[in-house]
View (cartoon, helix red, strand yellow):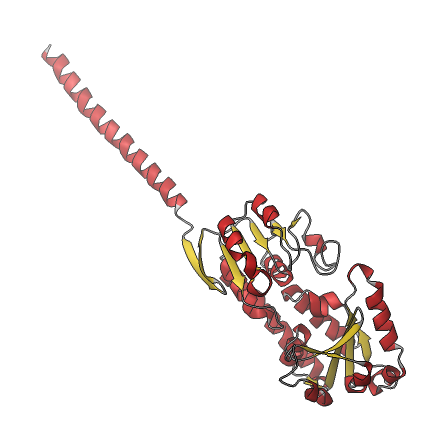
Length: 329
């Protein structure tokens, strides 16, 4: 009997130790699970509408600008939803292969809030200039980050978007690669960057000279190109578009002259009025009398790539175009 009592006592002690060990393992397991849940910390992004806190790395992003769409694609992120491209059906030719399955959520000027909500995003990226009026509605759906404006210097917006999707390091690499590409092309061009360039855009019933604050203008500045000197007088403080562009009549065609001229046409859905405007201007005697035209240094390029898309992918493609044109590749 005494032996039996000793055995039962020993068994009880062992059982306690076993239970304690199991309990410890359970606690460790729970700790691991809890650690896993909190591994992706919250972060705060300051932007045009204030500051927004985002929990973890966003997986479903809705983007409301064309240049923002290019930023996400360059970061390896396919958006859940995006605004339609200004040209294309519904996407620019140069990004459409990467946009299969992406839902259209309106245009930059008129986003579809209901469609955005239906996509259940965990981040919305937009722009104050375009969507300030619906910011409160959007931020009620998901954390929302807005860039301030849309001009030629897309890099500042790109940095903001990279931070918003928790990809700052990758974003820095994308920008570094672009800067290296600019430096490489500048070296290849040599003295050619000392030439004066002129940039012209045709639209339905109107024409513009684009200048230093435009998308193409900023890239020309980075490469070191000069602007057609006679155009400076057109960009007075009263010009409503600032140094982005100036709307002109045919009497200003002589001021379009330069060492090299690039022109493009904004013709969504093959807009015949815009195409007719381009044809009318480029067959005008004043145009044909430009030295740059007579010398064969006028080049028609893509409106989407050189102006409308406004993002990092288009910027790289513009550099490719310039290399082919300027080095006759």
